[in-house]
Image 1 (cartoon, protein in one colour):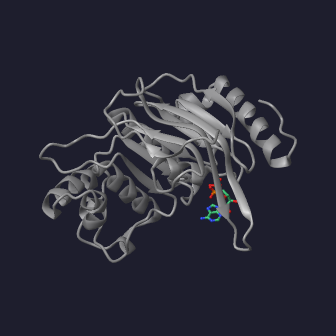
Image 2: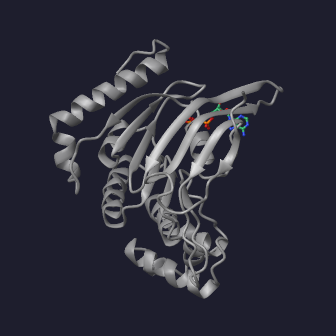
Amino acid sequence: MAAPIGISGRGVRGEQGGAVLSMEGVDKFFVSGDGRAVRALDGVSLTVREGEFVCVVGPSGCGKSTLLRLCGGLDAPSAGRVRTGWVRTGRGEGRVPWAAFVFQDFGVFPWLTVRANAAFGLRMAGAGRREAERAAYGWLVRMGLADFADGYPDRLSGGMRQRLALARAFATGSPVLLMDEPLGSLDPQTRRLMQEQLLELWQEERKTVVLVTHSIDEALLLGDRVLAMSARPGRFTDEFEVPFARPRDPGTVQDSPEFGRLRARIWRQLRGQLTGSGAAA
Ligand SMILES: Nc1ncnc2c1ncn2[C@@H]1O[C@H](COP(=O)(O)OP(=O)(O)OP(=O)(O)O)[C@@H](O)[C@H]1O
């Protein structure tokens, strides 16, 4: 019997035993420019628990972004089921989007002020302009961008733009953040600083996060769990529990022998997918 298709289950919190998000047997096909069917995902199943920070690594083109888009309801599966856990009804507070996205290219609009950019997610969720900008300004202060609130994003460095993108996502109040290689276009030093900032923010806010990254170090530094994907068509091949206690000190974590061991195991897995040898972790 064909698997059920669709995105469903926007029910109440805890409906799935604490799982905020689950996928069962999800396939995704695209039609390529020359009319061929491209299988991007192959029978993907995933459960993300409330408050968990899950990182996804995998070879380029294996379907990581597709997976994230399906998680956030930006696209529908070709087969299988995606279930999201809960939304707040927000009595009198405006709606709270279930999930907020952060993309690699920041998704910052050059024609909007920094303040309006930060408020954009909330505005899209139906909040009034004053309410949205007030909430967003609080996040600009937290991200060290308050002095730039009334200017335009062209005055911001790459790291500042990424902080703006994070401010926008956090300002929505969404319980779930879906991040697609959010630090991928930053220089290595800025990226490292942003990893530390993200670690702190997560420790303060305890959002549920699914983060796609090409960096094994980043995944181990930030995540509770690292999921490794196969080459396209993407499916999960391995799962690594990250054992480092929180709050984490990045230096201590990265200097630990366990960090080196886990990094080597994940790299072996990834390398196998990249070279086609499919080496096990
Ligand atoms: N809208 C689309 N139409 C046609 N093919 C698509 C579409 N979106 C994705 N694909 C194809 O699906 C596959 C998976 O793409 P996806 O962007 O999800 O991979 P990825 O793992 O995120 O890649 P990268 O790591 O390079 O960002 C690729 O072969 C891609 O070309």
